[in-house]
Length: 147
Image 1 (cartoon, rainbow, N blue to C red):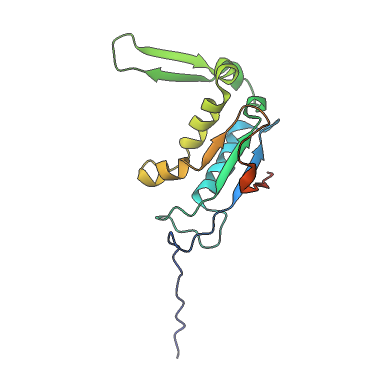
Image 2 (image 1 turned 30 degrees about the vertical axis):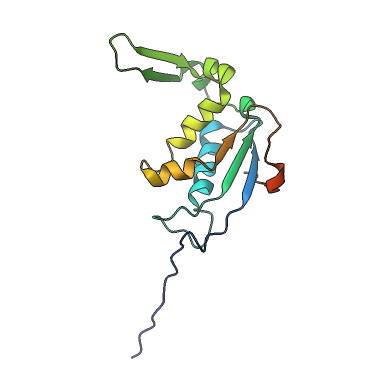
Protein backbone atom coordinates (compact mmCIF):
# COMPACT_ATOMS: atom_id res chain seq x y z
CA UNK A 1 0.00 0.00 0.00
CA UNK A 2 1.52 3.29 -1.05
CA UNK A 3 1.06 6.51 0.82
CA UNK A 4 0.47 9.73 -0.98
CA UNK A 5 2.54 12.63 0.27
CA UNK A 6 1.31 16.11 -0.39
CA UNK A 7 3.47 19.08 0.31
CA UNK A 8 1.78 22.22 1.50
CA UNK A 9 3.15 25.44 0.08
CA UNK A 10 3.44 28.15 2.69
CA UNK A 11 3.47 31.73 1.53
CA UNK A 12 6.24 34.11 2.54
CA UNK A 13 7.07 37.73 1.81
CA UNK A 14 8.94 36.79 -1.38
CA UNK A 15 6.11 34.74 -2.90
CA UNK A 16 3.11 36.94 -2.05
CA UNK A 17 1.49 38.73 -5.01
CA UNK A 18 -0.26 41.92 -3.86
CA UNK A 19 -2.95 43.67 -5.88
CA UNK A 20 -4.83 46.89 -5.26
CA UNK A 21 -8.61 46.94 -4.97
CA UNK A 22 -11.04 49.83 -4.77
CA UNK A 23 -14.36 49.37 -2.94
CA UNK A 24 -17.30 51.75 -3.28
CA UNK A 25 -19.13 52.11 0.04
CA UNK A 26 -22.28 53.66 -1.41
CA UNK A 27 -25.36 51.98 0.14
CA UNK A 28 -23.24 49.16 1.59
CA UNK A 29 -24.06 47.72 5.02
CA UNK A 30 -21.19 48.53 7.37
CA UNK A 31 -20.65 45.17 9.08
CA UNK A 32 -20.98 43.00 5.98
CA UNK A 33 -18.72 45.22 3.89
CA UNK A 34 -16.07 45.52 6.61
CA UNK A 35 -15.97 41.75 7.14
CA UNK A 36 -15.28 41.19 3.46
CA UNK A 37 -12.65 43.92 3.37
CA UNK A 38 -10.95 42.42 6.44
CA UNK A 39 -10.82 39.03 4.68
CA UNK A 40 -9.12 40.63 1.66
CA UNK A 41 -6.64 42.48 3.92
CA UNK A 42 -5.76 39.16 5.60
CA UNK A 43 -5.42 37.33 2.27
CA UNK A 44 -8.19 34.82 2.87
CA UNK A 45 -9.36 35.27 -0.72
CA UNK A 46 -6.17 33.60 -2.00
CA UNK A 47 -5.45 29.90 -2.45
CA UNK A 48 -2.09 30.18 -0.69
CA UNK A 49 -3.45 31.85 2.46
CA UNK A 50 -1.08 31.32 5.38
CA UNK A 51 -2.24 32.51 8.83
CA UNK A 52 1.17 33.63 10.10
CA UNK A 53 2.11 35.60 6.94
CA UNK A 54 0.68 38.89 5.71
CA UNK A 55 -0.51 37.76 2.28
CA UNK A 56 -3.34 40.27 1.92
CA UNK A 57 -4.00 42.89 -0.70
CA UNK A 58 -4.29 46.67 -0.58
CA UNK A 59 -7.84 48.05 -0.26
CA UNK A 60 -9.01 51.58 -1.06
CA UNK A 61 -12.45 52.36 0.34
CA UNK A 62 -14.21 55.36 -1.23
CA UNK A 63 -17.55 57.00 -0.42
CA UNK A 64 -17.21 56.08 3.25
CA UNK A 65 -19.78 58.75 4.13
CA UNK A 66 -22.51 56.92 2.18
CA UNK A 67 -22.52 53.62 4.08
CA UNK A 68 -25.65 52.45 5.90
CA UNK A 69 -26.49 50.55 9.07
CA UNK A 70 -29.34 48.08 9.39
CA UNK A 71 -32.16 48.53 11.89
CA UNK A 72 -31.86 51.34 14.44
CA UNK A 73 -28.07 51.13 14.75
CA UNK A 74 -27.60 54.61 13.31
CA UNK A 75 -29.23 56.12 16.42
CA UNK A 76 -28.67 53.36 19.01
CA UNK A 77 -25.06 52.29 18.40
CA UNK A 78 -22.53 54.18 20.49
CA UNK A 79 -18.78 54.45 20.16
CA UNK A 80 -17.14 54.87 23.56
CA UNK A 81 -13.66 56.24 24.26
CA UNK A 82 -11.94 56.52 27.62
CA UNK A 83 -8.90 58.67 28.36
CA UNK A 84 -7.97 56.88 31.58
CA UNK A 85 -8.75 59.89 33.76
CA UNK A 86 -11.77 60.26 36.05
CA UNK A 87 -14.65 61.63 34.04
CA UNK A 88 -12.77 60.94 30.83
CA UNK A 89 -15.31 58.62 29.24
CA UNK A 90 -16.99 59.96 26.11
CA UNK A 91 -19.60 58.38 23.89
CA UNK A 92 -20.82 59.31 20.44
CA UNK A 93 -23.63 57.88 18.36
CA UNK A 94 -22.93 56.23 15.02
CA UNK A 95 -24.90 58.95 13.27
CA UNK A 96 -22.77 61.80 14.60
CA UNK A 97 -19.49 59.89 14.12
CA UNK A 98 -20.43 59.07 10.53
CA UNK A 99 -21.19 62.73 9.93
CA UNK A 100 -18.03 63.99 11.67
CA UNK A 101 -15.42 61.37 10.67
CA UNK A 102 -16.73 58.59 8.40
CA UNK A 103 -13.23 57.25 7.79
CA UNK A 104 -12.65 56.71 11.52
CA UNK A 105 -15.89 54.74 11.88
CA UNK A 106 -14.99 52.29 9.11
CA UNK A 107 -11.33 52.03 10.13
CA UNK A 108 -12.42 51.11 13.64
CA UNK A 109 -14.84 48.47 12.34
CA UNK A 110 -12.25 46.86 10.06
CA UNK A 111 -9.43 47.04 12.63
CA UNK A 112 -11.60 45.14 15.09
CA UNK A 113 -11.87 42.26 12.60
CA UNK A 114 -8.10 41.89 12.12
CA UNK A 115 -5.69 40.01 14.43
CA UNK A 116 -4.66 41.85 17.58
CA UNK A 117 -0.89 41.60 17.16
CA UNK A 118 1.92 43.06 15.04
CA UNK A 119 0.70 41.08 12.02
CA UNK A 120 -2.73 42.68 12.30
CA UNK A 121 -1.18 46.14 12.57
CA UNK A 122 0.81 45.43 9.42
CA UNK A 123 -2.36 44.33 7.61
CA UNK A 124 -4.23 47.43 8.73
CA UNK A 125 -1.64 49.69 7.07
CA UNK A 126 -2.81 48.40 3.68
CA UNK A 127 -6.24 50.01 4.13
CA UNK A 128 -7.00 53.50 2.80
CA UNK A 129 -10.40 55.05 3.59
CA UNK A 130 -11.74 58.20 1.91
CA UNK A 131 -15.03 59.99 2.61
CA UNK A 132 -15.47 61.17 -0.97
CA UNK A 133 -15.22 59.46 -4.33
CA UNK A 134 -11.68 60.70 -5.06
CA UNK A 135 -8.48 58.91 -4.04
CA UNK A 136 -4.79 59.45 -4.75
CA UNK A 137 -3.88 55.87 -5.70
CA UNK A 138 -4.64 55.90 -9.43
CA UNK A 139 -0.98 55.14 -10.24
CA UNK A 140 -1.41 51.69 -8.66
CA UNK A 141 -4.24 50.89 -11.13
CA UNK A 142 -6.66 49.43 -8.57
CA UNK A 143 -9.24 46.88 -9.64
CA UNK A 144 -12.88 47.29 -8.64
CA UNK A 145 -13.95 44.91 -5.90
CA UNK A 146 -17.71 44.46 -5.60
CA UNK A 147 -19.61 42.44 -3.03
